[in-house]
Image (tube, rainbow, N blue to C red):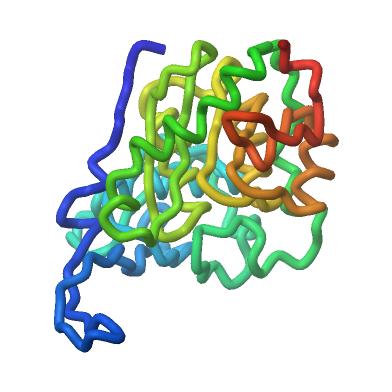
Length: 266
């Protein structure tokens, strides 16, 4: 995959200034904050979701969110009425009954409001990729991701997801106040660049691994998911069920591999 996008997460859209009082000195200073605003996602003009996100790459976020929900997306754009903080998605054979739940989310969470666990994984078939990489390559990824987190460097207040190729080259990085949004933006970027499924790529996240993130990775067909933090029990269960190699507590000197360790070589 030749296309690369390191993002523009340090732009004015994602970071804002605020006055603060430094304690204990009492000095008034300016601090940088991550911007958080609502985004309404529509399909054919019908609102289906509102997510709190960091502005930027909104079309990617909407596409990635819909893909994670099993919705067959064609494109996403600002609606004709130019409504602020709104993206309209074009989708094939969209069935509103698939998403009959309260779609307000705080971080593009693919589970919030669902009534049954079975419903959240139905669109994530087992990942059959034969990708193999070295342990040294995987343990190098969090440092590369951190170096590319421009908004985090300014604010300390955003999560990140990075997409890497099999050689460890960073292809795309996205930052957002919501960890799920960051991954949805990367998946949306991959869709726009005809890169799905991610059969020969690796996803790396800057924090912990929840069930929802593993679900999104599995839907995208990604065989290896790497995290700086810990996975949840349900994340490990899903990774084992879907054939995803799950790596947590990843540092230069090692990591924990919770599933499908055969993809990692010395």
